Length: 170
Ligand SMILES: [Zn+2]
Image (cartoon, rainbow, N blue to C red; front, side, top):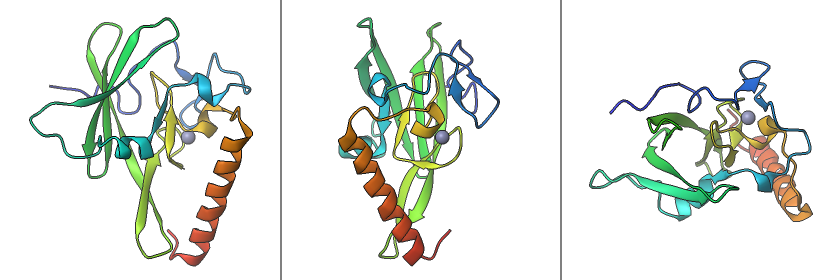
């Protein structure tokens, strides 16, 4: 089974990003795009759902969601020690995959916490957004619709900043 057609994204589609590698802005997306309109993949949720445990019996676990016109989509999750391989069927029914590596930040108590390394900018992200490519919120130019989410992230960033200062730093 050869899964990796494209090293960074699921394949070339109309949703291809403009501005070259790293800018990651989608053609059809304005800066006012809202997080809720995007399919989100949350590392914390994957862990909570047990999707990061090694695969047993060769059965790939998948997350499912319905798109705007009610069609069911499936995204297979293949966990590895250094990241996650996501697999899905493209429009032609071919299996395509993308590998998203982990990146690590030190915790206050000498451990490490893992994040997605955004395939667009390599910044640590807990949540990646998209269907044909996976990118962090900044790459997508997304804003949070609700204030509570925004403040949650501010608090999170603040905590990270503090950890960086007291940690060994990387
Ligand atoms: Zn990014």
